[in-house]
Image (cartoon, rainbow, N blue to C red):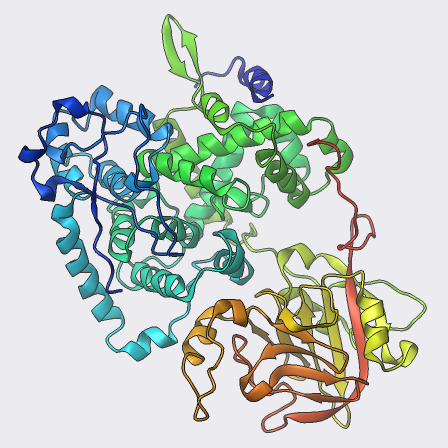
Amino acid sequence: MLRQLGATLSSELDGYDGNAQRQPEPIDPMFSAQPEDIDLTEINPLDLFCSSIDTLCGKSIDLTIPPNSGWAERPSRGQNSQLSNIGDSREESRELCRRGIPPSLRCAAWIINVVSAANINMSKSDCDDYGTLKKVRVLEHGWGVVLKSIFPDPSDLERAEVLDFGVGHDQLINILMKDHGGNIPERGIKSLTKVLHAARDSLGIEYCVWLPDITCLLLSFMPESYAYSTIREMVHEDSSYFLPVSRVEHLAWCKTFADLMRRCFPQTAAVMEHIGALTPLGLDPIMKRFFVTLLKREHVMRIMDIFTGEGAHAIFRIGTTLCCLSHAHLGESIRERCDNAATFWDGVRRFAHSKHFDFEIFLTQVYMTKRVLGFRRPVFPRPEFVSRIIAENEVWAENNLTNTSIHEEKKPLGLVEGEVPMVLAKDSMERLHLAKWLPPALQSTKLDLIYSTSHHGRSLEMFYRCCSSSRHTITLMEVLGTDVVIGMYATHTWKINPDGYGDGGCFLFRLKPDAECFRFKVGSAVASYGAEDDSGEKKITRLEDVGQLMISSEDFISMGVGEGGASGLRLNEDLTRGSTSRSMGFDNDELVGPGIEVFDVGLVEVYRFIRDVDNKPVDGDVDPWKGVFE
């Protein structure tokens, strides 16, 4: 199937020219050699390449080298010294990386690739040293110095939160709790926190939307010291080879991606432009999330194999080809079923996870060439050409940064007028606050009242019944005797489940007065609840427990887990009494006011979300791509 799609790609191209950490173990080096040519007695142990280690999630890594893979069995670094850093040998090494680096070699290979690309005048032997045991103590010592300067006292690390570098809170929660194999363990989050703080405080990076995902990928195969050193080399002198490290650069790279789509794949570009998928916001799955939300994890790792050597040019090349092939597969169904960027990228993701997508064939399409005057030339523009486009677009980005939205401007949520009058969310300013707090996919929706105590009565049974078909809901409640309105946003359908459910997308809030949102904070949860209390009862420490944010039974509903059985916000069985206290993860104050933990409840309303485009519920069962991937 993918080979057939390649014909469409070719037709669009036709006519175009242009912590105390474990020490890494020794393992096989990077490049190919014949085992029978090796005398193991002559190998200096310090010349052996270090093995990969999963610092992020602590999972085991296959340490075997597949036979006939082109990768070495056990020669030392010195036995590969004949491979130079220039000319055909560099291209041979890149082609080898495109075929995939064995997981056991990724720690060594990735850092060598990056050092080599960032230091073009450094000898191959010196570059290879970074992947050998010879460099372990040097990198560990340097990392220790950096940590000591950033976190001089353990309390500094305990208070540190994971930095988002512009990717946004909602995307950061997805990174920590879903997109990298599920919930990242606490130890992995601590490692991620340290490396990201070092990138900001030691390397001076303030804005880099790719950095959280790339750091997670690095830590999946590297100790903290190697991940930090790799990032340091990525921003060595010319950071633009690997990363956009400012808002201007990010905007320029997004425009460059759009320009390359129009130049190389004009038909796909026209479709994407029509539905808003070529705007800086529309390109988020690639230009903000580095393919993590689009491709299978093993394929994202393969892209990292390529990216560490070829830099951002590979991302433009892979990303534009992926869009073209996805368009070819989705065909006319895009025009019939797709009217926004989110739906388009969902189709791309479904295609990339379907039986029709073969990653090896896909890469042949990415790196296809054509014959020009008897020579084979790459179809995609060369790195020098792409760099010139980026440079030109940086001038444009500087002049248009304030006029071009990188983060979507918010407007109040809409309203669906029904038989039951809505009260607590009627004011536009309060709906604007809700829009700012909600995830991007819900910020352009309308509120539809599905439960009100004034119409449906006060009972949890009716509450559950009215909420049964809605996954994402906003619950608002007024505090009797005051002008206070508080509430909670749920990411799962309310139902009887005393064991707990929900995820880090949930949040608590005070709508008025003094509107304030209390989002889930992983750092706060890990640092604040890690010991036994005076009674010897263990507090909740695991992220899996913290993730049980919604607890509900026949007697109450609650959100947020606190100490001693308390909740961030809780309502009793007849929705007449509520309580609020500081809760794990949200780190919220008493929502009603200082010192007020128990209160009487007035009106309670629950809202679902309606899409503005087709006036259908967000949680409806309509699948725009139904049948396309069967």
